[in-house]
Length: 224
Image (cartoon, rainbow, N blue to C red; front, side):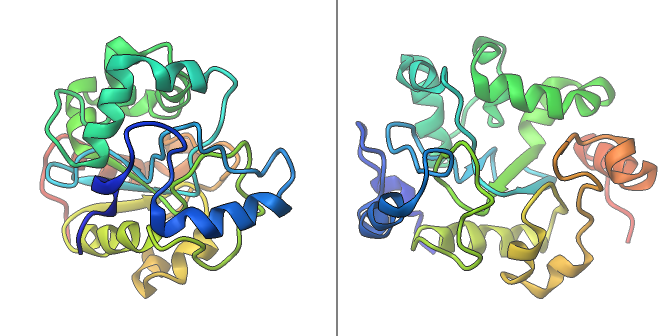
């Protein structure tokens, strides 16, 4: 399936033509907490499908008051667009790039992957961790998103997931009910015990699952 994000305009509003009308319609009815912010670059996934050994399923990228400034920063904006195009970069999972450590994206993801980085060095995690969001656009909250796919662009993320299920360890943070509608194999995917926390830790996933994640990020072959 062709990557639709290659067609994203380099300036706001950041929305694909195929998604524009449905997003506009959704925003007319949404409250401020759930309205989609098209001034921010979408993040349907973070990381490299080419090098990933662990895939994390999430609901949608959040929204912080400092995100606008971050997304206007030249180097961070460039990293987001390289990610959308699956282009090579030193830190494919860019929240772990030290240059971006103060961005809201990095602050959130560093807190939630801290235990992984303690067990595996940050560079390895950045190379081998891929996050796929159920919905690609930013909003403060995502729980009122429709239960069924809303945008055409989501189909690319779902196709990416199906590919990753064949060769990666997949775990889930949030949106289990939605993800289960995409592929029946999600029934076997472990999800966070506390989706409000979303920390990838032994407490939230269990020692066994956490150890498997660490092993995969260490580039060890997964046991059958």
